[in-house]
Image (cartoon, rainbow, N blue to C red; front, side, top):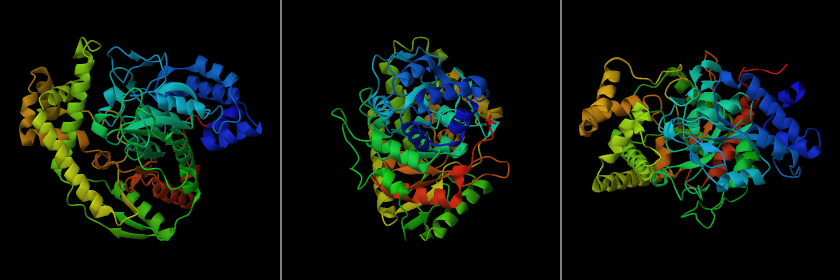
Length: 497
């Protein structure tokens, strides 16, 4: 079993699927190895919401070994997606939801041969970019368990980085695929709007801001999984344009002479660490080594007002969800304090105010897309600082007192005052200034694990593409992966002997 666990720890999903088809390893052995690692050391990272071990073993026993990812274990995020009969907690202490059917995406994973072995922890209702909840506690980074995994797909990233599974489902409404990937040394592609359906659970999420795909060890895994899971069904209200070629083919190509922009500024005019800028420089050097033309760009249309409007949309969408689920949320005091404040903020946003915010975002998105259309990709940061110590996003001192008073005295209307709104926005976004941009524009963006800090922590940046053009991003990412050697890096967590 130790030999199989080392295979699981060291290989990506594509390689493991190939081994199953060649008869070098069985689905049951892979699943048992995944469960064994989870049982022995999973508590150290605290990334599992629900264990699906018995069902996973049952699926492995009857697996069709000709499938592309036959018997490869994976994790499903505990938020916004359904596995029949499995409680979905959404990272919260409120009553979980138990669906009677698989989401279309889960069905597509199973059709490709993946076997879900667990659901992965997420921040409460996906609202926070660290995965530390009252329901499940702190999810820890396998590179250093004193540090965060990011969020909201932090459990997914932790399980992949720990070598418990090679692929995990993730979703992204403001960076929730890309930020955990950046913190955990993984590839995290947020696809174009409409590329992967949410049906039948939802037609869209957060007014179209949400996307879903996966966090993976390799570019080729991300591309191959997207090939097998992308595409609308009859319930989909819209879909991204079909790719010019399979994503896996794009990931294996080596493009030449791309025009690449590099955006270094903070759109919120907040601090950026030297390590983040070093990561961006590392990506720029890799792109130039590959023969691409890299040039500095500015995006002046990105202002603090853009992010305030983004927050209004998210808060409104969340408040609406809470209204629809009022029966399940009886005793809503069980929501976390930050979640309660977001809910109340969303409730006080009027219809006209919401519509105006959405229109302003659309106009800025239009200007941004026009300004960057000449570039095949734009490199920019994801996280402004290396992965934080656990608890690093918790407020303290006067900031904490203000938050407590906003909650306890129901003073949320004070957030209409620009100074207070700006302060709360800074407290929420000082770690992650950039990723919400692409949720508004609908562009694809991929987190690339290009840098390791002096303290041995991963620090990824992102490449952003044109709407519908994941092809170019996969091609560029595959090339940079090859040049950098990042595919051979593994977290020093429970290394099999």
